[in-house]
Length: 109
Image (cartoon, rainbow, N blue to C red; front, side, top):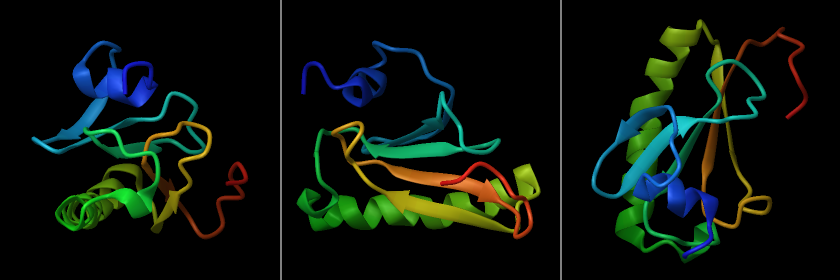
């Protein structure tokens, strides 16, 4: 999609702090993080809603999530990674991976 900010990031038109990239998916740090290390994982191809992803892309996206979770926990000293999929504010499927501690009393998510 031409004017989608995440499509522009995936194409490299807008710079981002990339933390993972392969042919189909891209992870980068959120510019308005809810916690240190707040990462967004997107399919490079535009899909507004999560349920519209083809099965192979769905599986790849969550294989990357599974790979990233222990890395994020270690890197940010997190006890767990809060996952969320909304796709409302930015109309491009994206997974939020937010490092958290059980008692962090951090920003509400």
